Image 1 (cartoon, rainbow, N blue to C red):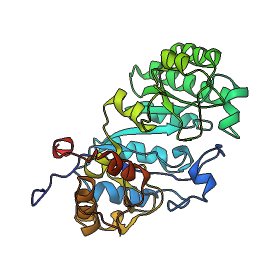
Image 2 (cartoon, rainbow, N blue to C red):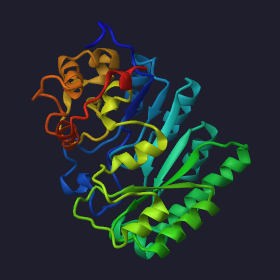
Image 3 (tube, rainbow, N blue to C red):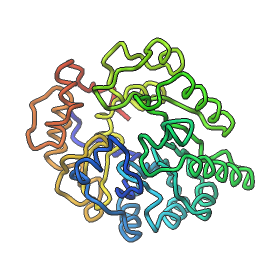
Length: 320
């Protein structure tokens, strides 16, 4: 099923910080005491080590389980990545607190994309989910970033507004207002389903018309983003976007927050880490082979859904 030596990925995810300054209502990190992720951030020494040991990585996503702006070395990391020709993408930040120097750095050092999670169009709605957050701070930080883009005559970072539709923000008025604000900020807004399986939309016909989300099916929450941006099924990232925790542990994918493979990528590098027997068994399992109970994916709800629907990963989906 596999070639003797697989091609190395050019993309990776390195979670620069798992800490957060908010207490979002349904966040697994808050509800389950940081899960298997733990609380911390990548040191500058380990960031440099990661780039040194993995020169084949050309695209790096730096945010997943926490707020990346809490990493005190972020500005230096952006500069180093830029000087080495590594493109940086930043996913799903709350953007409540960020210094002007870091905002300027995002522009100067050509961060390619910044996705800001804003689940509402005013403070009253926003704070019902993003507990401890300040809607006006987020909007003002986006405006500041846009000013730096004008100053340096840059088109990057591309700004995306992520709006998760849920019980707190699914009114027509709120959705339309968010779309209007996003347009004024030169942000492309996209909508996602909540992970909460108990949520039932107040008006599914209206929501589908305004957001494109179809609540008449059981598609997983990630599918909305995947279909729009062509990133594919999250399990494909085991091959082409491997996830590394802030402390160097190999997590395999961005959906995994409950079990790691006990090897340190900062010490041995990704090439060797991806040759680990559990990684190889996991790939076979995700393609319909024998289940591996030692795999982080074995008890994952995404894998269970794959088994249920018999929608295993196909070889052509992971060729790159």
